[in-house]
Amino acid sequence: DGGITQSPKYLFRKEGQNVTLSCEQNLNHDAMYWYRQDPGQGLRLIYYSQIVNDFQKGDIAEGYSVSREKKESFPLTVTSAQKNPTAFYLCASSTGQGVYYGYTFGSGTRLTVV
Amino acid sequence: GQQLNQSPQSMFIQEGEDVSMNCTSSSIFNTWLWYKQDPGEGPVLLIALYKAGELTSNGRLTAQFGITRKDSFLNISASIPSDVGIYFCAGQENYGQNFVFGPGTRLSVLP
Image 1 (cartoon, each protein chain N blue to C red):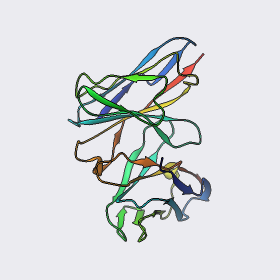
Image 2: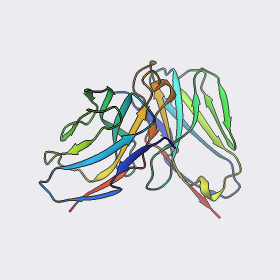
Image 3: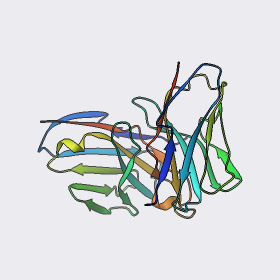
């Protein structure tokens, strides 16, 4: 079955460390997105990519980095520069023309700084 | 940037009751989406709306694209325990643009 897979489901990070969250999709979607979700808040866009080797900053990109070397993969690195990284992170994808059709989301990664 | 407002913020209802929630924007949108998020999971698309006045159903769920194009409504009939979760609206101002998400309505269903 086609879908979008995020790993790991839970991640613990020590302060000052970088961590990378994985996102893989086999839906043949062109566009991929990373969102951050905090309790009681909506989804805030971190980065998005509409084609391979290209990506744009979203509303809260500071302290994060991404790469898009393959169509299927869009990893997110949470750097030590991110002051409050504890959150639930969601990856999503959509067809290139079809941001019109909305996004398919992964099941999320919960990052906790310890 | 654009912001969407959702109301109510949270609601507690008895099993079997009907539910209504809405989403409003200061901008005109071309597309409205409604998602449901179960605890600890990613949102799942429930209904997509593409033109003003459109009324679309998905089982016990019915959503409407407001005629002003600045709002949308979601109704759930005869609620059941598995309806528990957070319901998000998302709007797209122009085709091809990223969607903007509302803060969500948290629904609790009491047996």
